Each structure stands twice: as structure tokens, then as C-alpha cells.
Image 1 (tube, one colour):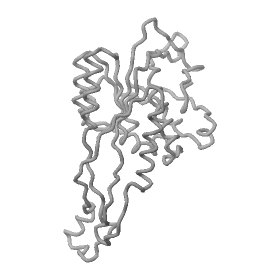
Image 2 (image 1 turned 120 degrees about the vertical axis):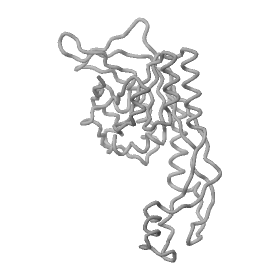
Image 3 (image 1 turned 30 degrees about the horizontal axis):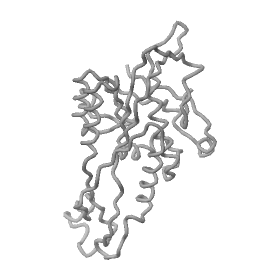
Image 4 (image 1 turned 135 degrees about the vertical axis):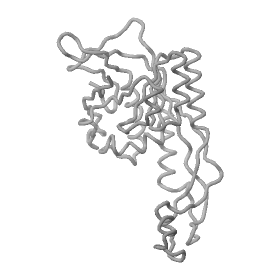
Length: 272
């Protein structure tokens, strides 16, 4: 079986084949996307514990080593064990500016927020993980407050007056740069140098389609892991398959299981 926090092989219900010349796989994780899907895909994992989240990211990527190839004569799932080349994690450092709230003008130090502390700790935890390469972009300097879209709509309709606006009606507008570029460069290097046979993209949007198209043109098998999210048609068109290696009914993990390292059997969703 495959563990949430380990590298156990599929057993009992499956047969594991080990080739003399195993295929190599690289897993590329969009960090922002993974964290957004965390509560949905693993609802009982503490999303505020950076050590637990880092272990989960690492373990989920490792599960892509074991890929179902069919069934044997007894009807058991047959898996092939791939060699893991590397896990790439793409993200941006947290916002660490000092700013003032848009209405009350109260000072806020974003470097001391819970989100910033969590993100820095998560990156540090991932740096310690075996075969993990952390790829960090950067935030754009043009960070500003803007009205929430629903508030702007109500304001234009006249349902809210300007003098009724408060800090809660605004959100911080930040943009990141360099993440897509780094993923594209890594995909190009892996493909041109024939370092891997397969690339797994843990992503949810079409921003990474150019990287997928490039890899496929070079003969690389490109798989999407959308973590249960509905995909844009363009991603289906330019990839070779969709696979999230965890059974939906067994995606929950209690804090006690996380603490003790107890495993839960998982298997691949059908991607035929």
C-alpha cells in the first residue's frame, strides 16, 4: 500500500512490476494550486502546520512513482515502479511589505502575518526533503489595495455609499512573476536532455500549456494531476493523461494518523 506520509509500495490488492530499465519520472508541483486544493483533497490534514503539509506534498509526489499498467490473470491491479528523478515545487516568497490599511490607515507588517510565517516555514521544510528542488519566483513591486469585485458591483449599483466603505471591503492585489518561466525552463531541460520519460504536472490552469506542448513534442509522456479539480479543455488537448493517485473515499487523514505515520491504502483514479 501507499502511505500518506511514506513510500510504501502497493501491496495486497496489487502486483508491483520492477523493470530492468525503469522509466524515470519528474513531478512538478504548482505550490499555490496545491495549497488551494489541500482542504478539499485532504480535509483532515492540518493546513496550518508547515511540517505536515511539506510531508504531504513530498509523499503525494512520490506516489506518482507507482503507475497502474493493467490487471493480471487474477484481476489484481498491476503497477510499474518508476524511478523518481526529482520533485520540483514552484512558489513565491510571501509578501513582507509594511503597508497601511486603505480606510483606517492602520499600519500592518505582512512579514509577521500567519500566512507569511507559514509560507517561509513550508519552504524551509521542503528544502530538507529528499529529491525536492524549490523553485521560487518573486512578487511584483506594484502591490496595492483594490475593492472586492462584489463590493464594486454594489457600489456601482448605488447599494453601498463611498462613506460606508471599510477595510474589509478591500483585498490586497499582488502579482507573481517567474514561476511559469521557471517551470517552462525546467520542462525544456528535462525534455531536451532526455533526463526523464514522463513529467507529472500538479497544476490546475492552462498557464502551463506551453511547457506541456514542448515536452510532448520531444517525446515525453505528460500527465496532469489536477487534485480533483475540473480541467480546462486545453489541458486535455495538450497532455497524455490525467491521474490523481488517491482514491476519493480514502483521502481523509486524522491528526492521529498524521502524528503516528499510520497509512491509508490509496489507488489511482481511472484514467483510461
